Amino acid sequence: MGVVFVDAHGRALRKIGRGLAGASSGDLAAFKGIVYALWTSRRLGSRRVIVHCDHPDVVAQINGEREVEPELVGPYLEVRALLHAYRAARVEPTHEGVDATIWGREARALAEAGRERDVDESIEDLPLWSAQRMEERSTA
Image 1: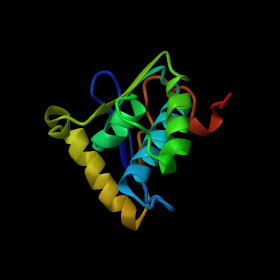
Image 2 (image 1 turned 90 degrees about the vertical axis):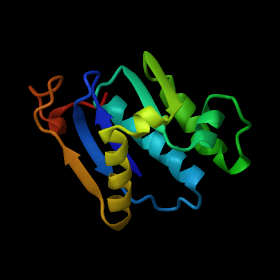
Image 3 (image 1 turned 45 degrees about the horizontal axis):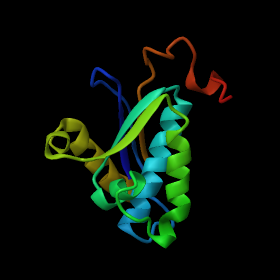
Image 4 (image 1 turned 45 degrees about the vertical axis):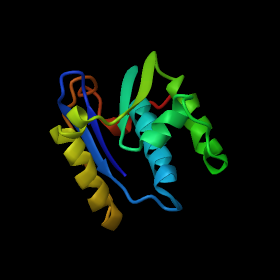
């Protein structure tokens, strides 16, 4: 999984690449990646989020355009619950325009690197929470 967190101005806030244990299919890995992205984004204080996913079948399932496969019901319910934790949230398929951006390429590169080792490139001086270090923030 590769995730790049970008603010409203297109600046990268955090880049993460992780290998996913127990992901037996690409769709299950995509669901796990979306859950991870939504959970981490909310933990970082985001109120609005757009998740771009390069698995159109997964996006269609999340958005109710396709029936959820039985083995994906659990991750689907997690994603739907996390989407309700935001003022505004949606999951969109990766389009050519988004895919062609540096962040789309970066997410794919992080996913590849994450297969071999975990990568976490956090930016320490983030504008919204630079006054408090991440370890000191309350998760409540």
